[in-house]
Length: 253
Picture: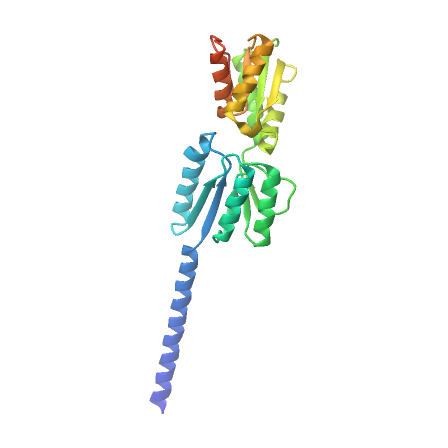
């Protein structure tokens, strides 16, 4: 009887060990199923696909080799980004890393994610007007704009009569407005801002159209261009080259 009892005890220990092993296996399986949705806003600006996405994927792989990244790009279409976010949630995303096309649609995405208890990280662009954002990661965007403006002033040798065209970012993007605020803090009262535009979608094509319009109205008399990023700078430069301006004036990016 005693040996029988001991046998049962060893069986219980074996069963317990088996339960622990099963639990560990289940935990590992759950880790393997972790899905991270990376929702990028557009591809006209080269950085998103050439820098942000590969750097993000490499860092996640280093930190969590078994994690799966569900990456998508909305091509500057807010409705498409909403659809991509919904697809990621349906596909079991554990977290959304959201670089918003625009703040209004992004707030809807965040609210839906919160309802499913999926945390949302606002990446690069703030999503105001909602309490459904768990984290916000970005630059000091106002300082970026100020440094851009100061660099332009340096390139213009602080000439107070310099005629400057401002090609800002999108009015629908909080970053664009912060860049703009910072740039004005560096330029206002120190140069003549002769034309200024808020560029829809940060589009290089639209920036080129804006610069073409400015050159026509100003008879090509421009001393410098504040452009909020490399994409808008490329559009402004293309417009000036098409207008035959030589040498090109200083352009920020």
